[in-house]
Length: 198
Image (cartoon, rainbow, N blue to C red):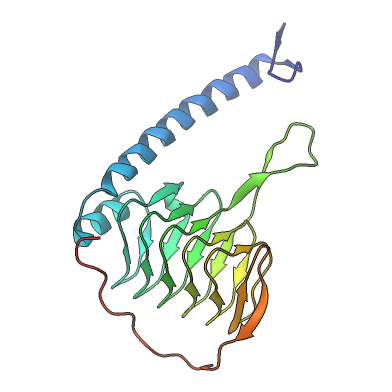
């Protein structure tokens, strides 16, 4: 009779499944380590090629600055002309969709999974994150699972976004609340080039 970490008796089939899951996690950890190494390459073109090789879908003109970290890169989609700052954390445990002409500053963390505090085994719950076109996300913002940020919205630096953000609103604080409204309701700008060696 074999028990799991919570003292529950597990069947031989469950044991096999646990072994398979453990091996899959080792492989994922190795893949994520390789992606971290890619993040140290100081040339956008080379990094973008490697990121696409690992399954990140990136539109033309988009780039991720150095030292980014990821979970499950195959679930990450980035639109056209989007710039993601250095030290970003992009979680792909569920779908992460980032639109066109999105400007994401440094050290932004976007999560698709968190622990279920009400569950006895503290298991994870996952939910997709969607960021609309022409969004600006300031530095050190944290976006939690299940959040949708509407077109043209602005998230002020340091905010923790736990709920959906309506289009063209400006939010800030912990947790993020509406602090203003963006006047330009018809943006059509292009972000331009990313910093050369970042």
